[in-house]
Length: 106
Image 1 (tube, one colour):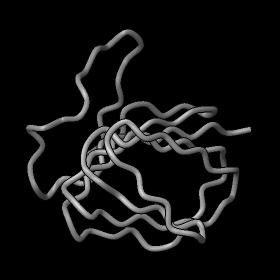
Image 2 (tube, helix red, strand yellow):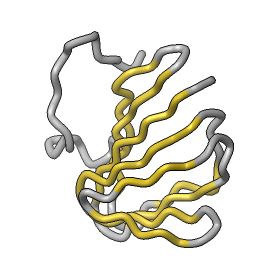
Image 3 (tube, helix red, strand yellow):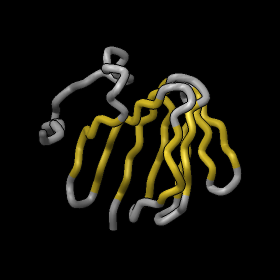
């Protein structure tokens, strides 16, 4: 099944508190220059070290996550973090969390 991407001017509310427990990511927008997604992590979930080819921002909408890049940086609701293009990082949820990730491509 293809992921639904939002149309221009399509409104949604984040975080998506009604998301089923097994859904971890919701792609919001994807173009050749920009991608936005809501990452939903349950307490104890981890995403192994990886890198993205663009410049990324991570905005914690709710909960508490740790970004290791390589130092550990805690993000709680309202915290925002910038990652340079190609920066290797991992993500771990200390609480049920929702994170808005944006990626800008060259």
